[in-house]
Length: 495
Image (tube, rainbow, N blue to C red):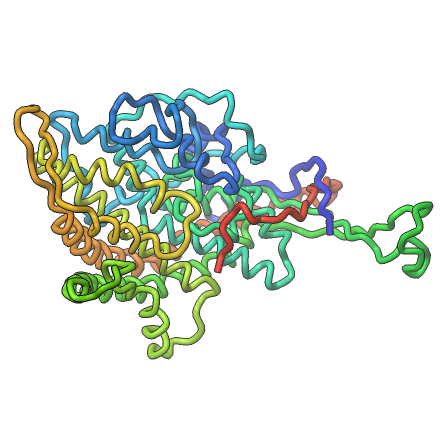
């Protein structure tokens, strides 16, 4: 099946509502204008996708490992961790957020549902582009870097990502892959349903979990023409291989209503929030068993003739199925296993960030801080960024537990300190349990968040109905897009 794409024109505008209905004007946040020209890279090259944020850095913390020079490019997701952690060495820097819920969870105090201001949507130029020549990116301040990473590690932002991925899967199951393709084109990503990783969206362009949905609902209604090839080239489907006859096609229109897509997406997001709340309980259960398993295997390893494959039992692999089996809460979402694995990984990464901030605030020259900073920055792309296999969070903890104690020269170059990776691993696991408890509270707030978002959605939908009645006499311009059936082997298979 082939989708042909041509120009488009306005069918229904995301308009202002009539004052006679008693509704105020609805528009998009103005800070979207500054990000209109940014384009996303495809997920098939997701490592370059995240590395495109790297800036020139003269530090020796492993940022140039296997990637060459850090070109000052602008991409769409995780900022260079080296730039992020280099800010730890700045004097007189206030502590980052303490984990308490506030608007700073999303990296911007003045952006969210309650601070909804004005813009007119985003550019339709969403095709992937070559990263050369690189675009210059201004030097980020410390507060901007902290806000950027808070948005990257925000649980509600991750919930929106997984809700969209699950929704695209459900659209394909319901014989509506065209709406899923429209969502991918709108976001500027390809192979979204097959992407197993965090940070899939541009957090510079969409700094909050709701900004993406607000922008989507304000998009114009579109009509997509689907062209399907008929069977055979002759009359009645005969002469299948006759080269002298032209192939025959049948065309039919598909209406795309962005407001309807958002309306159908919200129940999926709400279901996932309930599952995430239960999954975070599992994370806390697993955290209470990891170190016990580690010391048990350590004792067994002294008498065993064969080396252990892992330092602790991978409890998280099997505990999800056992936990959900006895819950009796009905069927799970289609990507339940993948959702848990990525939530577990994101929680581990956020806990590592918190521990580094904690160590830096207590003593910037502390040997534990400097060692963990180097250990994390050298492995962040291997364990956390981009499309990852299952179980990378446990692999990161396993690598940390396998690291031997070592001496490290302090910044004064006159003394050395002894690192204790075991103690650092214990602290990350303990902080992960605290983070999981905070995220559980955030998941309980999703229903209330959706009430406010639905209020805006109803206003936008009523406004589009009014404009639709005005523009009925105008002809329609059809969008044509060519759909190519290419293998997605370069993007990790999803479940």
